[in-house]
Image 1 (cartoon, rainbow over the protein chains, first blue to last red):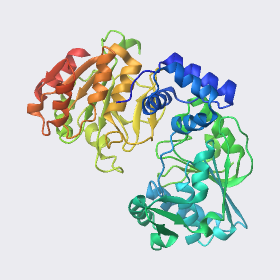
Image 2 (cartoon, chains in turn blue, cyan):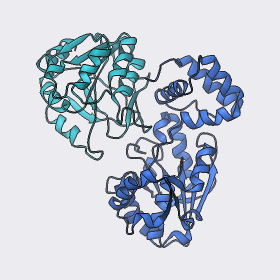
Image 3 (tube, rainbow over the protein chains, first blue to last red):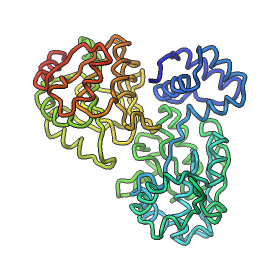
Image 4 (cartoon, one colour):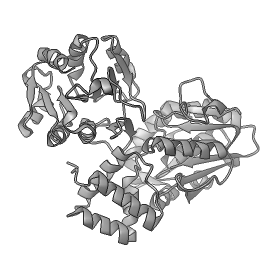
Length: 274
Length: 192
């Protein structure tokens, strides 16, 4: 089992080190999850003591990358919540289709499964040629994976099921080539993606978008940080643009909420109306 | 939670898997109308899209039953249900957090995670109850509750539709109480 070795005060010490030495600000992350991730990693990497973990995080840049990647959650799927994607395809993309150019931001994209899902939807709506998908994350290593477009073959059965439920029009396997136990997605999808590091905590708006997706990222933030990120999204979203969140996330209690209206079908998609 | 300070326990987490729903449908209708310790239900579910569980349980009680929302404060008199496909954690400032990290014991929500988190947040004022199930999820979490001097309660495996989960807890942990299904309502009512 995951030990509960690293104590609350020690979590705070690590967070201070991460900010002071490395510029990663996790101080407004929800503690329960963060503490669990740190203890999980402590067990996984078999540290003999907290002091050794702390030393390594402070001084070993290679380990730092692993640490940041592991304490942030990088679990994702293609077409996760298929009905969400169906709503994007039927409610959002037709509205965006009249624009000369479509800019989409996947904030906290992790290893990119959602970005590829979106590119497939755009391709099937015949919009991919005039779209750009900006995909950002704070971990450079997950972006590298995302940029390669290589995913385990073992996942494809589930993804194909999700894709069909999402209203996919083609044979899902037509989007990739299998090679041993991995698949690589088509270059045409990847050619419309731009991957870049961006930290929602500390970085600013960098463009104006018609659609921003940030799913299952805000749950790791405390309320204050959630509010700041909503402001960042609002600053980065064109009027009549869309903001899409995870199944259990909402803008309902945030300051920006009066400027937005939720789509009628219960999916977590809001349109900026003011 | 001033009205809660007279109670020894400030949070009751009930975990269950196969065969646990029937237990809850027996227990929940028998809770006092003014039962005022928050109850958190973490159940393994087959279908990630169903919201039926919340509605089903709500029909059995006058207490407020709701699926947890992220960063929702934990309030007395409510029965909270962990949403499908998220882990449910409890913050020290008595708020829920959701988490979509890796499955634990092939489960999301994992009972272990919520039990351990309740132990961390509530310490000796956490109470965990482990019901029927075919999986060992919940055993490590129960140990965490014990380590924090909380109370570990297990459904009597003889009364469980699937005895593996409670039996594993009894085998591995010094549990405080082993209760038959019909004893659970009185036990809970005696606390609040």
